[in-house]
Amino acid sequence: MIAIRLFMLMVAVITVSACSSTPGNTIPTVNSLLLAEPEPTSQRSQMVIARYTHILYEAPLNDEERAELLFQRGITYDSVGLNSLAQLDYTEALRLKPDMAEAYNSVGVHYTQQGQFIQAYEAFDATLDINPDYHFALLNRGIALYYGGRSDLATADTSAFLEKDKSDPIRVLWQFITMRQVDEIAAFAQLNENRAKLNDEQWATSIVDFYLGDITEAAVVAALISDVQSQEQLNNRLCEAYFYLGKYHAALGNRTTAANYFKLSLSTNVHEYAEHKFARIELANIRAADRPAN
Image (cartoon, rainbow, N blue to C red; front, side):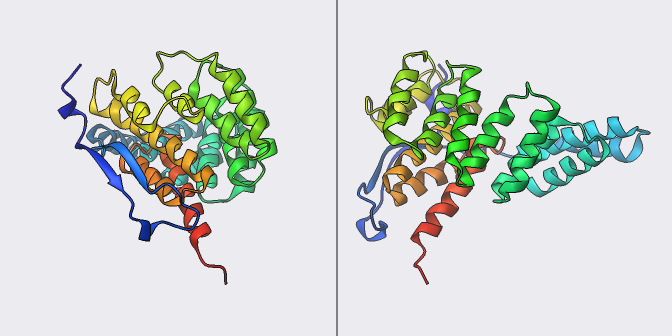
């Protein structure tokens, strides 16, 4: 394995002082963290954007070809965090090619991030109407329903998404997160049942084990670095791990600890990951909960 110095800035222990803790925050520390070296803006992505832009302006394209290029440029904009430009491209692609399922899915994610949940549901419905096999729209619609306060419907979608691959710990976690809002006891029972189908060799299985109380947060970090081969791979894993650790603490009311984890997830700059996209929603929800009532 490549020397760990290539993968991280430092190993740190972050202590949250009691005076900064929010009411109900009973765990004042976040232990044994790896601090990500934020992903730089990809030079390759910038060149891809420039190339797509040149073709869009200069080449004689029909509507379908232009829509496909706009969608691909939107994906690239998303990967470097240029969300507004990405959404403009998806919207224009749909104007030119109204049956583009993947563009509806992408624009739906943006609506979710903006809290425009009705528009998000409609976008994901359109994705699945056009292409019922576009399974990630099930997850994304489930997440939108969850953040929109409709966890009963969200659980149906995240459960359907899990059925497509029961060996994926991330799918297991999203089913648990949505189900927990409906019936916590049933959610933990289902989580325990789903754990039996997971592969111990997948690093993210450690997050499920942590949720079940079988390992510590430090063990989750140890699992994610165990076979890391690059800085990019490390950042991807940190983005996911810190988001789900944040969700764990948020559910317990440990809002300061949860907020720190969501900030750490964002610090990776892995813009294309769902966990990075929704960490900002989580932070907004924490700030709203901390805001004094008028």
